[in-house]
Length: 102
Image: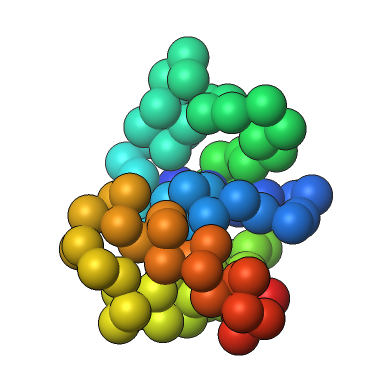
């Protein structure tokens, strides 16, 4: 079964969207990847949903970006004071301000 992934074609990507992109091809529909009518979570959000055919989970257009987002997410979870969305977003912001992530 094909899945959908979020990607950002116009970086820099905000920390909140990094969390969503890091998930990879886990969304069952375009609507779920874009959260239906709320595809744009904030001013300047440029994320889009891309179709990921079965068997292409590690080679879809945007996979390298997803892996970079996943790496950034993992680093943030290691230093986050709270393992919540807001805690991880804050940790991504902290790492970026220290210059330890892209």
